[in-house]
Length: 247
Length: 317
Image 1: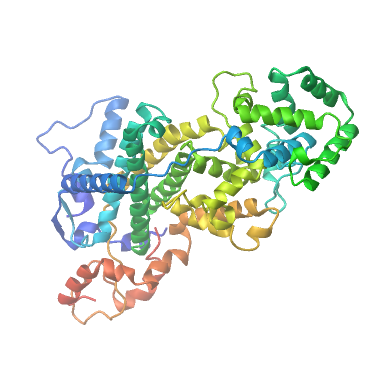
Image 2: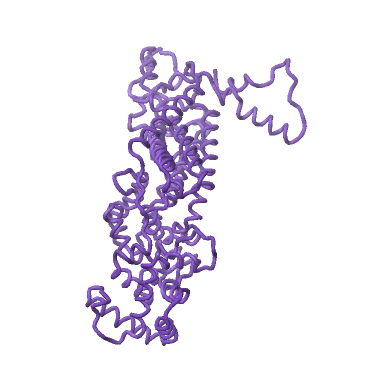
């Protein structure tokens, strides 16, 4: 069953009243149902080729992101200085630190996995782009977090990084020595930016489905063998080679 | 993208399907990651080395503090000579012919003599001697000020930075001012004065005290002891034996090699390089050649080995 066929499952059947309501709300509803059908968003089957541990790192990244957000939210309750004076606060800071380390590690493995799958194929370029920008945004979020620690490390990172930011004019508006500004970026702007990208990324993954395997090219197709999806005939190999990795 | 290449991409479910419980997988992953994070936090904790204050600096290394304050007063410190966005003492770095910092200009004006020395002295209750010294310095000509600070700087060098061992000379009011500033710093009042110079009660901008600290060598020495210096892969490290921002390895890498580590425009060059690499990373799907690399590194054969095994068993390629 194709992704489109699965999406069609949730279209109104003949016995149901067609959704012909007027207005912006109805139009948005129809668009959402068409573009993001629930059966595709929350599938109970997956393609057979999704059978490797590398696929786990996507969901592990998402899980770690939620632990990062949760531990950060606990630290926010009593403010940025709490963890320096409270054992419980220090524990939640440790939880925040280690979940960030896991988040970045899982994301990098996920990224390399998708790279080696050439996962941008089949109209999935925007999925790659949202993931890549989310990765860069996560680096910025972690950087501002280190600046918001209020300890020797954050002092040193602030005075070191100012030179790089000032060198290209960014420091005029984004100052690592301005604790209040860095804290706001760390707990509001950048998490929102990364969070929105993560949501878009996941919606795109569900909408397009998991990228199919690359065709093998080391052996010629056996005579008489039925053509399988994902295989490339010898005659077609050369012509396809230039376009296969295209998004 | 050609229509042909789109058409060549098979539908994921045309390969067959298997049962899958997405919500269960996510729940298990969340519980596992939470448990692992808690275990790591409980076992390894997290570093928290106390920050340096102006007071701890002045107490621990008064010679460095005095030399730095003198450099702020005579305009020879790193901040005084910085350029945009703090002043116009230099042009700032360039990326090729473009000086981005200079284009943006001075947005956070800092006069090191006034902001780090004279204004803090004037804002505190002083003896008549100190008040008179500040007034004498402030009303002297620039040439006279330079003579006093230059003489005192040379004398400090000869005395290994110890003001108590300085020989008599024409230093004007400079020693009196710097001695008073050192006393304020040791008492802890200079920390607060540098934070409230803008006149605001509530504020969160630590630019002035951090720049003052950074102009001295005390903070850099402490950072070096904790392998945080730029030549030690700097910012990607963390104090103690903890993983820092390992994901900054590529950015930090450029600072270790030529021409980045010996260029006056090193920071701008690193940013330019990283901007190009970041754009290539984001738009990789559209870059011929780079997007074909996965085909030539057979990791995909490992990822989809079961799929290929099934294909072979069924007589496919």
